[in-house]
Length: 382
Ligand SMILES: *Cc1c(COP(=O)(O)O)cnc(C)c1O
Image (cartoon, rainbow, N blue to C red; front, side, top):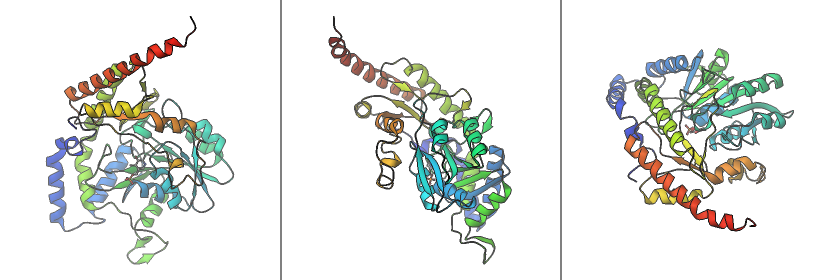
């Protein structure tokens, strides 16, 4: 592809010197797990999110799972999850021993529908996981209100939302606790797997810290049956090196996203993501929706432009969950997975390549739309 969907290496090029210095510092330090680099990154990320506590963990899936375990959620409990998300949101619930209960999403944004969530609350419901999908925060007012009135935990899946805000409040501080992923392709990515939990609940943070480190409060003292899921020193140092660049990178994402919206907003057949004026997105992805998604993707690929689909198979239709969640019960999520296509977006995307994507997408869509018109007109009685 001459315009890659996302170039991880190029996206962090402006931080390359700082990253290499951080790696060298850790190599020389002789301290690789649970040391000063993790502590420093946790403090910096907690401050960035505006919360009291941050706990580095092994990945985003574990961050979600450990939040649920830390809240005492497990077998017999149900957790509401959006039907349109990366499968990790659902897997975290089963990994904690609880049962995921799908909830359909809003047609415009693909985000959890607060009304549908309210209707899905039952006697066993213990928590709601709101996913800030594509970088746009969920309606935190509605979900926090629902959770407060029903006595549920409001868990944020912020894996795609580093630096996003809802009404000026950072993602990561909107609920009971939030899960971040630092997978290399995220807005803030490590050189491997990594994750974090942020929360204003200091006692919950300490329970999660213990669970993530063999259930241990002191060396060889194992109070609870924990696991091993830690952010390591190398990844923490890399993340600290990249943290200063995050606002610039997110700013470039937002600039390119606005330009896409301006250029593609009136192109027939293309539906843009609905943006809530109360939300400030991290623009992790730029999804559009079109009827003949696979043909548009093939057309762009022939032009050397990479695209991706987030996500082609919703969790309820995947083998892992289809037996317990009947097909067809989430029509809006099904429509998203059938028609969404993510265009190239990232801090390294050049103006020229962005313009190329706009041109190719516009041409392909306009040509297909024009071709479809005579047939549509011929059925109108004269
Ligand atoms: C990436 C992602 C996760 C999982 O993060 P990992 O670090 O890959 O485990 C969870 N939820 C969403 C929405 C994601 O995009």
